[in-house]
Image (cartoon, rainbow, N blue to C red; front, side, top):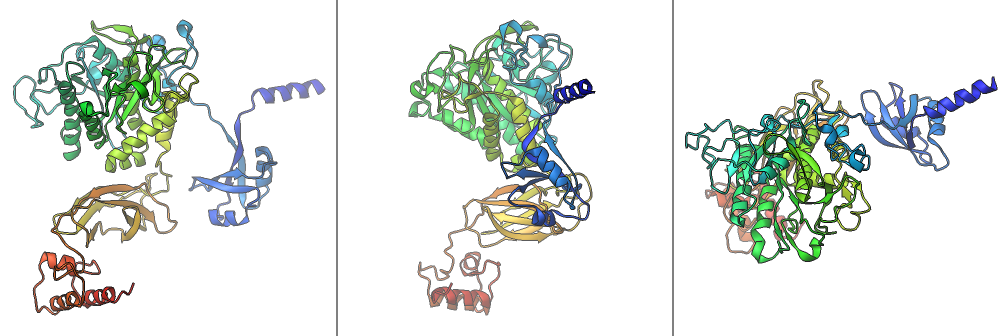
Length: 616
């Protein structure tokens, strides 16, 4: 019997599952709500950390008392009369999804098993990330596009053809700008060298394009960071600055057109890749000032620019570099790591300027001639990050996608920060890069999945939010109310909470779908944020925001006489308007409307008197 006990004990130890040491899960009885449970929970031992599944009453409990282990907490909480069930919060091992591409085993950068003397797991954790998504489309249905600014690309490469971006609104070869985007015959991109739609074949650009988005799981050759993504080919990585700026400008124009036509024209470009530059140049001097402006301009549309740093062992913080020495928040500077998870000895660095490392040494990808080739350089590291940006758009929650749509610049910066936060720390990058780590797309995919993700019982946000600023000093906001909860059930009994510049402003009943805000200053930006809130339990949606700039003439509130002095004469003039002794112009209303309701009444006169008398 003793031997049997020992065997069982050992087996239970072998198969024991790992769990969070300071957290447990509880499911409350059906008639007990969160507030009631919090009231009876011993605050010296436990705190409700978060709601896990509202519909089932499942909560994550944090253990406060140090002497209390997780198994002891489970045992104690199971005896609570309000708790139906309790269990450990077990750790879950990520699954992996592998493509069937016949050369994938040589792609150590995506999945390092120690092949060719490498260090196992010194990679970007691609198979783990591919269990979440394989790229292509975001939660709102936008087809994700990554622009490759390089020497060109082999457009007939069979592992790239399925993922090439195509401008279907342009008729090939007719020498006409069919879609009125300012570019003639731009079918797959643009050639900034010759300013036309012909894309030259180029081995370097073909290799970069494959790292980002060679077609995955097609049984042929290699796969990119994304199995499915649209690659926009733009030639213009050398010659001179004007060529590079024209190349960037094409990507920017396509994204701007996409946004202005609600996706009917243009392309949903979310990233550019730049595997080129000017060694030891000072991007922040007057000599290279337009580079920063270009990255900022693209960033305002949510386009992040991944850039390869110099292929020499220099500190960019001291020596400078273009573009990886540029200070734009929307540029991600990348250095080169090896299959052994160390910085390549021939790659630049910088604790302030270089954001992270990515695999760039002996990287296998597509190449001219229709096959594959292995290349080395920061040029191979940067497209890993550009591809990662596209991948994160496919992985992000619907809430995040909605937020990004309404806040393109801020959303882009968030994605950049999550890429840095998701890196695997490396001793060789610690202290010489911003993040101190190497790209890990699985870690970041988890972050973007969780950001603004909704519980199934949370309401969906409003959609089709639009602003009309044609009337002076006011804005009329319209939208469409959600019809379902995040989980798909019908939504009932809700209001729309509106904040202005981060401060709660008002709420609007369901069904109204219109709000006009009066008394605004002209040419001053305002940020409105809309949140759907259920009235029965205060569950809220992800926010949807819009920026507006009202129009109007010069108006000083209260100075009705326009003499730069506010006194009793102004109050008398308001009274004349109220009594209709005089007809008020638009500018008069702006100055006299003291309670911001777009009407002149006795209340405006009384408010004016209060101001003159110094009353609050």
